[in-house]
Each structure stands twice: as C-alpha cells, then as structure tokens.
Length: 161
Image 1 (tube, helix red, strand yellow):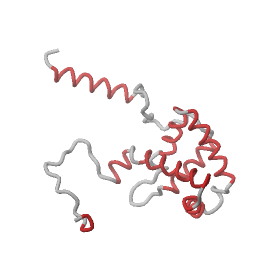
Image 2: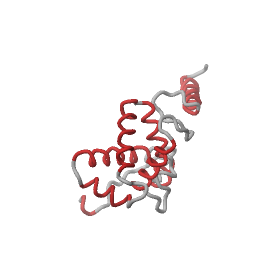
Image 3: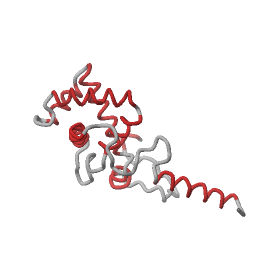
Image 4: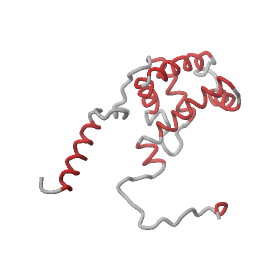
C-alpha cells in the first residue's frame, strides 16, 4: 500500500462488498426475503404500508418493499416481532383487508389507547422503511449522494422569513 487513500479505498470497497452480501450487522437485506412473518401476515402488512403511503406519481410503500423492511425489523428484534404479530392479528380482526382501510387508519389515528399506538407504530415503521429505499430517497426526494451543493441558499418559503 502506497498511501492512506489506497487504504481508504480498499476499506470502502470491502464495506460495499460486505453490505451487498448482508454481512453488515443491523442493515436490512437488499433482497426481498421473508424472514419472520407468515404469508398471510405479509399480505396484511403490505396492505397496511401501502394504505399509509400509497403510490402517487412515485411508487408506494408496498412497491418499495417496505413490508420486507418491517419483516426484517421483526426478525432482528424478537420483542418487536412478537408485538407486531399480535398487532397484525388485531388489525385483521378489524376487517382491514375487507373494509375501508383508509377509514380504519384515520379512525385509529384520531383515537387513544391501543388503536392509536398500533397506527403510530405502523406509520413510523412505514416512513422509516420508505425513506430508506431508492424509491423514497431518490425517486421521491430526488436525493443523490454523489452530488453536493456549492451553495445553500436557505429556505425560500415566506412563512419562515
């Protein structure tokens, strides 16, 4: 090795290879594989995340694979997984798949107690999962890590002035 730069490049390449092969602890896998939930639970979970963040001119949460992200979170944290499994059973009991899913989520978001907790939990997981995907970061937000701003002009909204 001739320089620190070469050492950094080798380290970055090794990290990229490890992440590609899912060897970096704590990072969700790139492949959409079910690791914790049963197929019926994954179907319900896909419907929940898509109802929370539906497709518009950008892909929705289900197309982005957010339900696989939630599955990964459940797989890596068994306490969360057990709670999510109970919460999915409760959601299924509310006729989420056959009823008006938007009306149900709206009611839960305005309620208190368990319905509010369950709604907030799924909403938070959906947002965390979606904005960690290519669809959320690049397609919707237009973020590109390979660019930089020469100048930041600040907020252009009048209400912030």
